[in-house]
Length: 288
Image 1 (tube, one colour):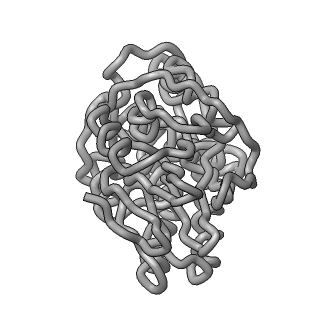
Image 2 (spheres, rainbow, N blue to C red):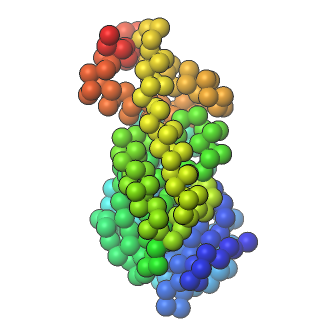
Image 3 (tube, rainbow, N blue to C red):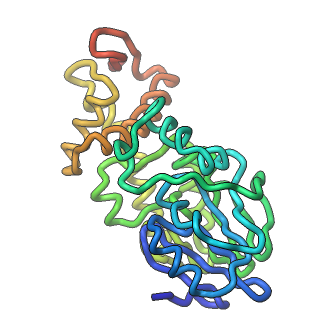
């Protein structure tokens, strides 16, 4: 069931949530979502002017496959390749070819992008703004009256607590994005995360503070696993997920280790860890 967010804007709940922004005689649809059945729900709302994607993850693009719109599909330039190529989408997380079902629980489909843009970029009543970190080219969409669809730049409390390690291609950029949103939280009428509650005012600040706290804690969590000796990125990931009480599966190790490698890379640049090669692979150690 659609939820009104004011000014004619509608939200179709889900994970991710889908936003409908009115323009002329139709709607711009942001991040259609993760099920083929959702395509029918979206199409029933009304005429679609265009489909706007925030990044290439399958749970955000799957329902776009069957939608018909006047203008077609928009995607930021860094993300467009992953929207169109399933292989590239998987390789960025896995490091190369990966079989279907190993990484994601959502079916992967290739979606043709009709319009590629560099943010910031104006599309009808919306401005695409860069929100990197979760993905390098991720964008959010800001309405003229200050409602921000923030994509996966922040997460709801429940997801953060259950995931153990949120997915970030670059955790440092993710932190910078969160700090930017926190600084400007009161400038937005509402903030709509893809996976979490719609927030505004003090509640938006609290949710952003919690996200910042989680991301800021990642380096110490990673380094604490190395106190007793060197570990591979997968071993570090396994240990942290276990300590956080998160579900441990091949998928969760693959995805969470992307974040862990990002943290290790920054720690390496700061001279806090070093890396060696042995039969286990790349082994990270604390610099004492």
